[in-house]
Image 1 (cartoon, one colour):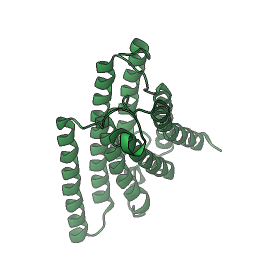
Image 2 (cartoon, rainbow, N blue to C red; image 1 turned 90 degrees about the vertical axis):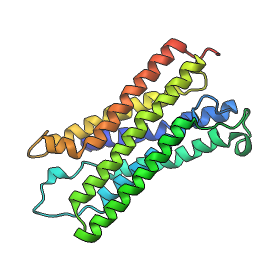
Image 3 (tube, one colour; image 1 turned 180 degrees about the vertical axis):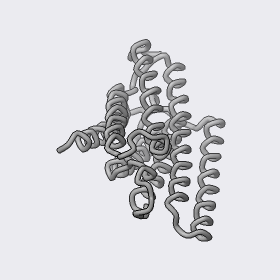
Image 4 (cartoon, helix red, strand yellow; image 1 turned 90 degrees about the horizontal axis):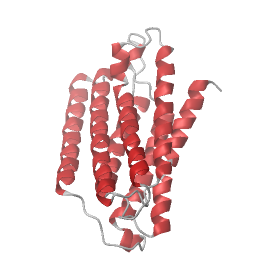
Length: 251
């Protein structure tokens, strides 16, 4: 097995495992108070955008001899199945945060999204619907095109990156307001960091095997994967700094 596949297994396993510590911690504590509902909702919707983008790139990309292979994003089945798994598990986490007292018999009241994040969430869904209508219209008029597919997928990646940027902010603030990381699983953060590093490393190997190597076109074609990894690493290092400062002390 070559290094590229090993890295693929590593980041899929790391990112897949990272969702389980918060589920277990919430169950163990009989409370989901350590998790921000804004974070969970934005994360779930972001995962959905990513699933749609990966599905189109993997299963509806047209192979043509005339087309420059560097235009095709370096996504794999690893990416798709990890994302699908993450989406399902985030829905489970959402039930813990949103309906913990009724479904899971947790302590504490039901959480509510802050108005600003609710508007952002609804705005992103509206934007996704508009992009979908435009994509369907273009394919109806012009026929199926890889260029149109890539453009639509990159817009979905942008929505995912936007959700990733925004989802971390309420959780960081939630930790700051509590002045505690009690109930927040640092194991998930470490898994996310490992997954981000392995994902970037794998992409670097994939691009190095291309005849043109690291070109601007190749970077643009893969900016979604690069952007998500960078955002993930940046905010997880913030979580680590909060863990070091606050620890598990009570509020």
